[in-house]
View 1 (cartoon, rainbow, N blue to C red):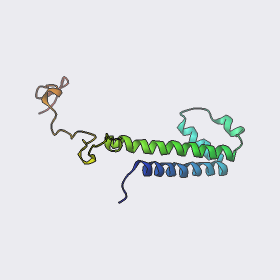
View 2 (view 1 turned 180 degrees about the horizontal axis):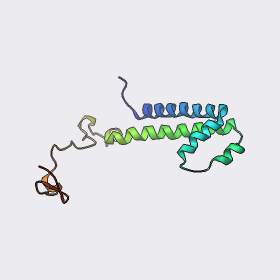
View 3 (view 1 turned 90 degrees about the horizontal axis):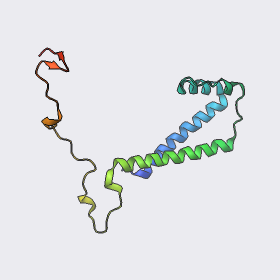
View 4 (view 1 turned 60 degrees about the horizontal axis):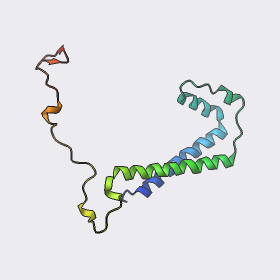
Length: 133
């Protein structure tokens, strides 16, 4: 199995977003009314009717710039997600440090919470409501 790396994850996310962006662009070329109907469900009541009467012209240069920008953002988002999820594993290390001896990013979960974190509730009562025991 190929190891999960920040660059590979960023590239995979950017490729996924590129495919979705191009599918949306092609759908806009073929059926702009369908795209506007879908968008109308996303914007919670915003009136998109003016866009249907005078649709803006589709410019290939602007579409390619949008593709480039959204893919760059997706690459950064995918890369940063892996870096933040891995904790200190990919962080720069001090000279002479041993990679194998680093602490885990999250401490192990405790089996039982300490008793002082839970409020004391008398048996048969919960929040002032009688509960059968």
